Length: 180
Image (cartoon, rainbow, N blue to C red; front, side, top):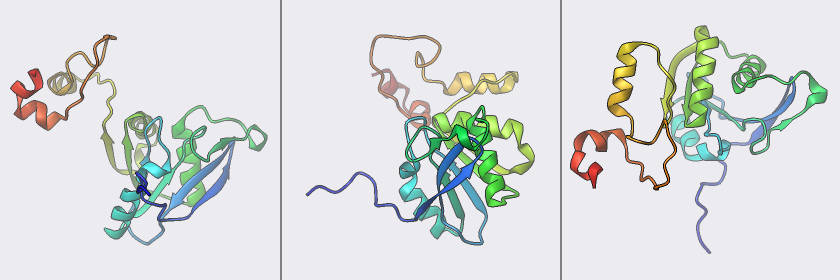
């Protein structure tokens, strides 16, 4: 028998019946600072199994939810109007749980949702972490920074050849390896 790719769910999930959605979420509980995790476009709460454990053991209260249409979260038009964004589902969950301020971490497509939420509900956030994702910047300093870290040819146009994605640190430290 082979071992599963992901660890078994360490914390029980539950539903929040929110406007327009029956949202499945996991809340580790605890008195510590709150960290909310937003999964990638194709992920679910299960993508965070190991991080839920590690962050909780580090003293954080960690919350993650299946975005509507993924995992166990289901749109429910009978329960109210459909929010127009993931950020609105997040805000409804935040209100449901009575959270005032928290840190937000979004990965890949969850990073876009986190940026959307941060632009809308800035006052709620202690910290914002975006990983494996990007957005668009209007500030010249940020545009210059992005130009230095962007993977050449990965964004902006479609190419037929396959990509091997390598991290920013590798690209910065090993230009010859990147060229190979």
